[in-house]
Image 1: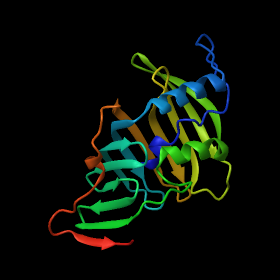
Image 2: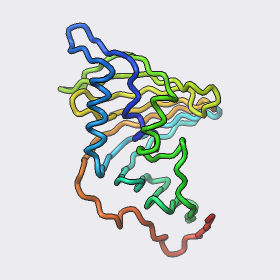
Image 3: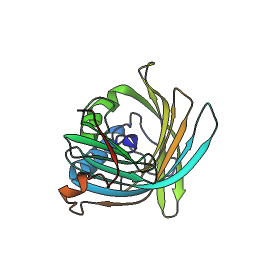
Length: 212
């Protein structure tokens, strides 16, 4: 899920679509940067599809991502709830009735957009794939390949919505040949999310494993 919010400045080629308006890298990057700079909080409803490389087992589920700058996130699916207030991370499994607690660690693989925003343009090559009409909207599709051949991610494909300049879909392939795709069904920006959203209280009967 973290990758879904870290692709916003990965454009590194000029986009041209025949009769469509032509964009330079700087134009699109500036638009994405302006959108990112205006973002204080966001709520996104998404669907996810996973196909595991070794077993070929496939899973489909939906979830909700809430985020607030700086470094506050809450991702909820039927399988897991992941929460951080920027200091502590809670990972809750309702199936196992267990919550893991740890310190929030801001690394190059972190799901903090503030951190990854600085690293991804240097770490990925981006090439234009195509453009797609989605109702009245146009999605710009890009393929991303890591420059580091030791990266856990082998490749990604992202779709950015023209005009709103938000990421609407992400597909990724990792070194285990597991394929994951996320599609944003709805997104609301700057609704004033409360800080209490980004803390977690374990339900009664939950095993608490504190790794701090």
